[in-house]
Amino acid sequence: MRPALNIMRLQLMIFFAQRGNLIGLIVIPVAFTIAIGFAGGGFGDSEDDAILIDVIDRDESALSAQFLTDLREANPRFVLCPFDNDADDICDLGDTALDETTATERLKDETALAFIEIPADFEAHVQAAIPVNIIYRANENISAPSFILQAVQTVTQRMSATLVAATAGTDAASKFPGVAFADENDRAAFAEAIRTRAAAIWAETPITIDFVLTDVDETDESTTIGFGQSVPGMGTMFVMFTVFAGVFGIVQQRQQWTLQRLVTMPVSNAHILGGLILAFFVLGMIQYAVVFLVG
Image (cartoon, rainbow, N blue to C red; front, side, top):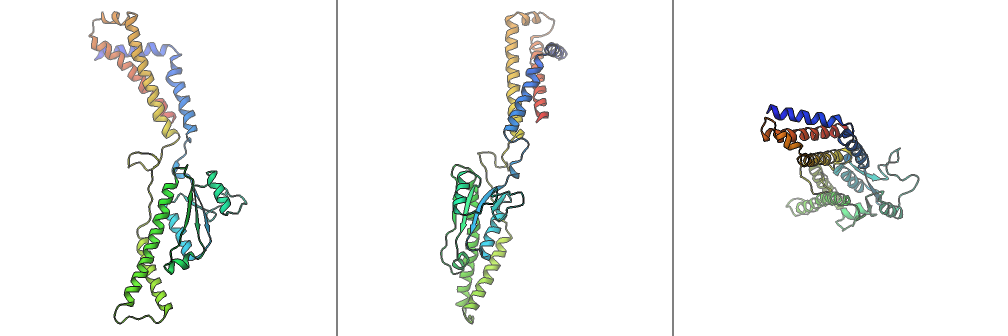
């Protein structure tokens, strides 16, 4: 093993004696890694990006407010505009009042990823068991709206479940012997109590919407961007370049009869080839370590 290490050390000394080799070993990989890393988002974390959802609440009732609250809980990245706008104008609305036309333009410009419109009399229709539609629109050119729609559907399903429980519970109670409601207000109060209890039970199981943008391992929780994406790719690519250059160098040494002269040394062929391979392996590891430290 010692002869192989000596040959490796000799090859490394020859390589580093030529200062120009440092450009390909360190400078170029570092430059490419930094450039692609910043182009891909730098040190940013995709989980910190706000997901803008435009909302028009024409009902402005307690039930519609509860719907929006449940939607926020489904994903902490959801920002419901203009309700969640802040001093920094995270919704990018400026002085513009949000209406249906503005919301449509923001969808086309990809400023917002989705638009939700809660109709008037939403609470009254829901409590009266009258079908009501919540308008949902999204830009189909964006991959994100699929999980936004999933969150909206989950919230509406939970809300529907509480109302079904209230209706079924009230009907069952009215048919129970010895139970009679004094009037419609008494019946409505009883139904509201059941709905509130059902909502409290649902609240014990928070809504969680998991989503992926690509086909990745299920344990991944976020999309890798910036340097987290460029470092492994750049490191692997340039290490492969170095290894392939090493293979070409060994072939070139054979063509120049340098390798044949090494064979005449009092060491085995395995030690000679092992030393050459180890030299380029070390160069590859040095290159990958430099790229990793930069990223």
